[in-house]
Image (cartoon, rainbow, N blue to C red; front, side, top):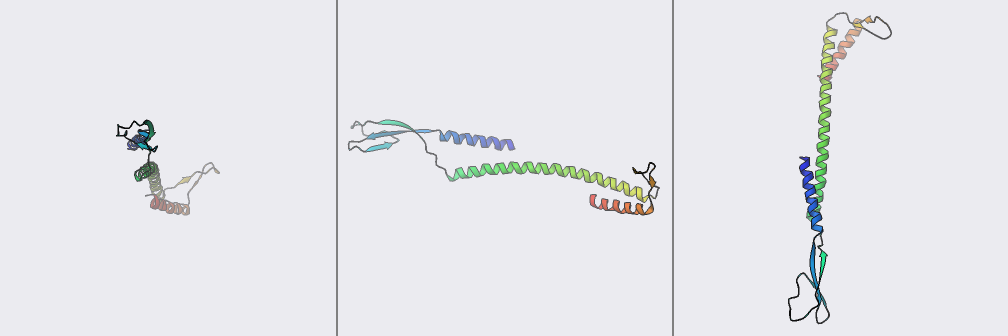
Length: 154
């Protein structure tokens, strides 16, 4: 889709370059009174022998409303492309966040089941080699923490 807009933009830009490089033939001559005339067409009177010169002149390109619209249109295309890139980036981030939330939800549910089972839970710490068994007070804190995690992640 983006490629189509890019190709269209390149095509229209190349037309603009071609249009600015076109030329037109201009005829110039002096009449009997000495006045210089310019025209796209040769003088009609063949009776008078005018010294006619032909000059190649570039076509004047006037900036019109269409040119302004085209410029605005190309800016709009650039904005559209940037928005699509940002949207894609946001979608990828949302997928990662959903995956993380799902993992955190599953972990919190497993922890809650473990803490509510009233089995002895041994906690290992770096201070003591053997670790220690979780007290009931710690178990209640962990249960509340797991419940809050489930509310926020699930």
